Image 1 (spheres, rainbow, N blue to C red):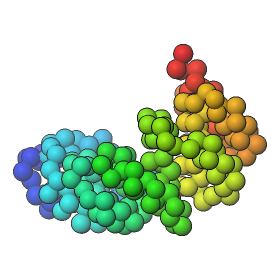
Image 2: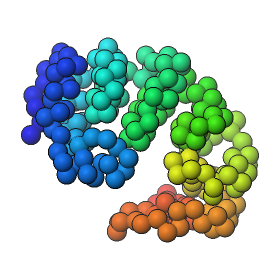
Image 3: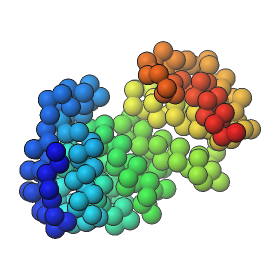
Length: 226
């Protein structure tokens, strides 16, 4: 049961409501994915819906360092209100995978600073930070490919993806997949790179889900486009 919260609730109230949702079974599942909490995301999202967008509260929740509070912060924040340096600092502090992913998807991608952050993060020597740059690059590949050197991206993926650390490898692989899906002129090369590198080829995939292995994912996603 989700605790009742008023839209004007303070950070302490939100943290208390989240702590009340802690569940050992949820924690066990989350910890297998590198996350450090036991709050079911359905309940967490319900709390965020009760609060409505609130940038000041989002900043207070982020400052707690408590992972569920940070996730709520990213659901109620106003992405365009963050400064470039602020988002960069938040990403470098977001070492929990779910917080990292939501920060990129719910804040950075919607920020007017997204392109500068993309280039900064893409060149960062920290593979976790670089993975965020690849995520923003994939957004460009799919939605605004003009000015993006797709051939150059494939060159980098071809050389570096197989030996990249897990999170960076995953981000590069998804970029490879989307280049193959969205850009027919590069599809044959994307498929060839995926087949040769065999990254995530043996990744366990649940029934009904798409394999992350690029050749399979490209074929399936292209077929859905009709």
